[in-house]
Length: 243
Length: 180
Image 1: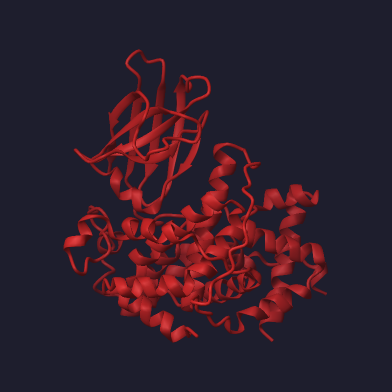
Image 2: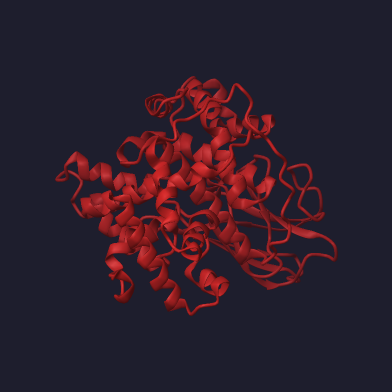
């Protein structure tokens, strides 16, 4: 009777990966396994298909009409208007891919290349598992150092790690984080947590962090109502990349 | 009726930069995917953000779809669900503030929304019924609410290792049922 025995962890790994129950190390190990083991990939795909079936019970809901406009501009961008068929935005240039460095790329069959690319397509939890990702930090401090915030970012993630070293928002207000590319208008990255913590940023904003500056403004509760900073800009600093 | 082949063709065209195909895909699948966002996030504003992130990601990754071995709806659902779970986990970490649950209005899809074939994915629902009720609830909460082993252990008031064993046994039972 299966209730009497300890389940073998390997048999449930793919399901736990799909559910998001593995910790980061375990998930990375499973991704590495999938990169080389077709059985693990098949196991993943089978569980993903089956669990997706749980959404069949969920009632459909029409999104508000204006959301499509927002999505269009997020997906296509403004420059896209002049180009009839832009390709998806390429990733920032990398030193060299780990597949190239390992000398694997020319030797690999299309199937394996495809499978490895598939991991990138599927995965939203982790970045590449072998090539150490580039990291970025921003040290933001107000002129009198009453507010000091450090923001860390690991390439290919959608998480900003915020460390509040000093200071707080004025009573009844919030601090909003912005990214600024050259002379472009600031784009909101969200409201800083009250203390240290993580912020999730939208996928399409990740690319803005290269060669950019960040700023913090004081905003009413809920953040800027206009999409641009409305209160004092209390700190500005460049995004510094390593790797 | 939009078929699986239709959706695949839309994604393939999107991979070539075809915005018309993107519009078609949105018309065919946004109500389904927004339903998933609302169910997982229980918050309209966050659900809208998640749907936006999902469609941007789908647009950008359309050229990688064919190689991932998933059926097109599963690929779309998986991207959407995972983005929602990321948001849930981030909000737990960032604020610990879970009380801002907006009232969800009833937004039934209009007649122009195309039904998407549910295929035989629904067999998991039957197999879930074969689990003990609390085990089925735990599996659902992991998939649809992104709960971790620790959160599930807390919710069911059992030690962490017990929850792990429970869930792994349930997954094995599910696999057995789904393989029949």
